[in-house]
Length: 66
Image (cartoon, rainbow, N blue to C red; front, top):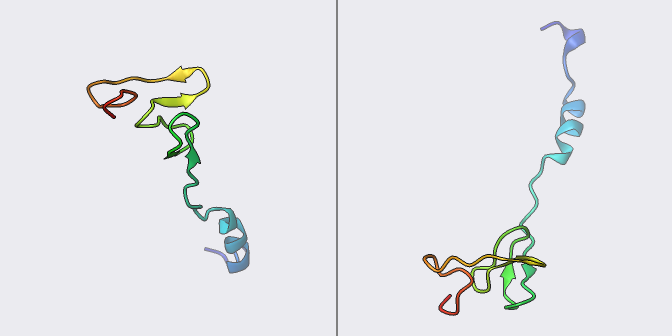
């Protein structure tokens, strides 16, 4: 590689500045009050978002047995 085309360490670090992972931030399910990840179904109540509740009896999601 020619030295004029070399990427400097500072430029590399600035580019990678936004690649750090952030920890998952659970939210509270409004129905069961248990923590759940955003855009995921609550295992106890089956709640995903307003107007959408998923029930899978075979897996115990959204059932009273949960």
